[in-house]
Length: 106
Image: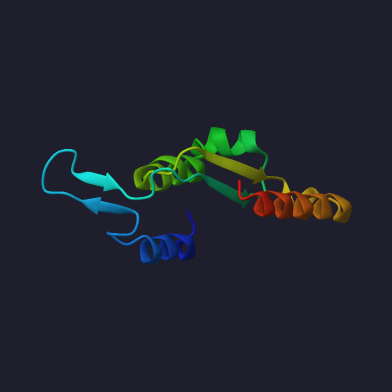
């Protein structure tokens, strides 16, 4: 994950915001239970390349190690791939889709 994004996550979701650490089992309390999340991201390569080369580590880390750890469920994604190969018309369709998803709160 890009360092700028990791730094943002570390500063926004401090202990006491996303999770509370306990001194006994289960050791954490997920403070954001009952909320859903959608991650929207771009990548230049096709998805199959990301899976083969990196096992799609970005998505796995976002879903499990961060959002799931804080209690978000369900966690959905919108992946926009092959960014450099799309036409301006396709880019407008993407932007409209992102706007629609943001307006729904999903």
